[in-house]
Amino acid sequence: MSGSPEHRVVVLAPFGRDAQVVADVVGRLAPAYPVRTPAQLLVALNEGAAAAVVTEEAFSVAPGSPMDDWLRSQPSWSDFPFVVLTGKRTGRRPANAATSLHLLGNVILLERPLSPDTLQTAVEAAVRARSRQYLNRAMLAELAQAHSTVAQLNRDLEARIDHRTHELSAANNRLMNEIAERERAQSALLQGQKMEAVGHLTGGIAHDFNNLLHVIGTNLDLLARLDCPQPAGRIVESARRTVRRGARLTEQLLSFARSQSLVPQPTDVHALLHGMQELLHTSVGSRIRIDLALNHPHPVVQLDPNQLEMAILNLAVNARDAMAQGGTISIETSPMIGDSEGGKVGESGDHSEQIEPGEHGEGAGLRLTVADNGSGIPASIIEKVFDPFFTTKPMGNGTGLGLSQVYGFARQSGGDARIESQPGKGTRVHLSFPVVQADLSREPTSTPQRRATPAQRILVVEDDEEVRQSIVQSLELLGHQVAAAPDGASALRAIEARPPSLLIVDYVMPGMNGAELIRHVQSVWPTMPIILATGYADMDNVGGAIGARAILKKPFSVEALAEAVHAASM
Image (cartoon, rainbow, N blue to C red; front, side, top):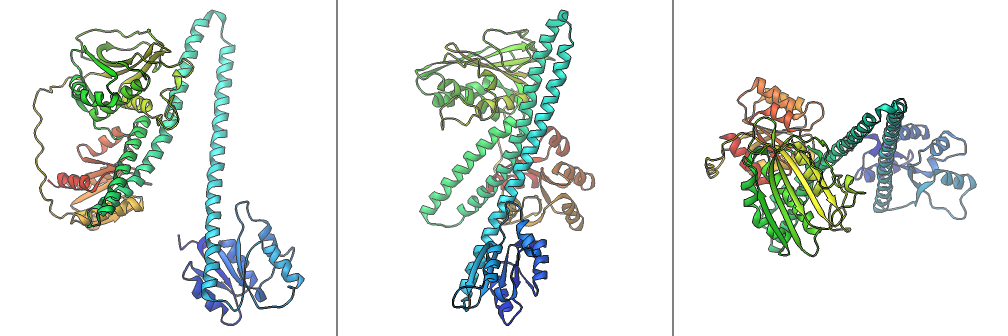
C-alpha cells in the first residue's frame, strides 16, 4: 500500500529549509513527494495523494484557477486535506489570502516557527482523515455495485414474469390442469434458484470468515505454547473457545451453501442414533421424552456422520423449543422408493412415497423423520423455514441457521429434506437418503499413536497473506523448513527450482485454483505428498483432483496441522 500514489504526502515548500524539514517529518508517516511549483502540485494531486503540506507564501488559490476547478470537481466522498504553514503576522489576513484558505476547504493552519511534533501531529491527522475518505469511497463503490446488481436482477425477474404471463394468457381453458401443474413446478424452480443464489453468497461469506478465524485461532495456538502468566492463559483459552464457536457457525453456513468439505462414508444410521441418545437427552432436557422407532432393515447410507449428528441435534433442539411445557420427540426410520411430491415443504398428512420394506438396491432410500407434538408452524411461514437466518424464535435465541444447515447437508449428501406442520399439532421433518451396500461388521482398526515427524521441506501455497503467514509460523514452530508462494504460478516455479518434500495448497486462489495446481503437480511429480487446506470447496471437483490426498479443514489448529503433516509424511 505504501507504494501507491494515493498514500503519499505532497510537499510544496520551495524556499529555505522548509522542504527538507517537512520531508523529514512527513517521511516518518508516509512517503514524501516534494514539488517546487503549484503546477507540479496540481499534477501530483491528479495522480493521487493522501495530503499536501504547503507554505502560504508559495501557494494560493484564486477563484476560477485550475486548482479551484480541481477542488470543486472532487467526488462526494473526497475533501482533500491541506496543511498550510504560515508566517507570524499581526492584524487581519489580506483578502486574497483569506479567500485562498476558504477555497482550500479542509485546512490545518500552522503558524511558524513550530515544533516537528506539531507538524507531525497535523500531518498524521490529515493522512488519517484521508484514509477514512478512501474507506467511504470503497463503501460507495460497493453500494453502487450492489444497486446495479439488484436492478439487473429485478429486470431479469420482470422479464421472466412477463414471459410466463404471456405463456399463461395464451393457454386454452381446456389445459387448466396442466397450467396449474406448470405453475407449481415454476414456484419450486424459483425457490430452488433463490436458495442456490443465497447459498453461493453465504458460502463466500463463510469462506472469508473461515480465513479470519484461522489466522486468529492459529495465533492463539502459538500464543498458548508460550510460557505466560495464568491470567493470560485463561484469556487465551477463552478466545480459543470463541474461535471454535465461530467455526461451528461457518460449518452451518457452508452446509447450507452446499460448499462444506464433507467426509462421506458408509454410516449405520441406527447405530449412530443409539450412540447419540445421551447427547440428545442432555440437549433437550428432562421435560422431553425421546422415542426411537427404527424400522429400516438396512440403514446404511453414504454421508458424513458428524454432519448427520449435527442435523439431528438441530432438529431435536428446534422440537424442544416448540414444546415449552414438555412433550415427546419421535425419531423414526423407514424404507422408501422415490417421492412423487418432489418438494421440500409439504402439508400435514400427505405422503406419496412408494415404500417397499426390505429393499435396499438401486433406487432404494432411507427416510429419517424427527417429529414433535409441539406448537407447530403456521402455513404462512412454512415456505421460509429452510431459508438462512429465518427464525421464529425471539431475538437472541437463535441464529436461523439450524434448518438451513439441515437442508443443505441433506442435498449435498444426495438426499432431500421436507417439512410438514400444522399449528397445534406439531411438526415432522423428513430427511431422505439413498442407501448403499456396505459391510460395517468389521471392527475399526485402532489409530496408531503419532510419532515424531522428521523435519520436512514444505511449500505453502495460499493467496491470503495473513493465512499464509500463520501456516508458515506454525510449521516453523513444529521444526520444519518452510517456503511460501501466493499463487499457483509462483508455486510451480518454486517446485521446479527445488521440489519440496510436502506441498500444502489452498483451494480458492485467483488464476490457478488449488485443484488445477494439484493436477499439474501430480502429472510431473506423482509421488509428492499433498495436503489441501480449505474451508470452501466443491467436493466433487476436489475429490477428482486430489484422489486420496489429505484435506485440512479451515480453521484448523496447530495440532491438526502437525497430525496432517505427520500422516502425509508416512
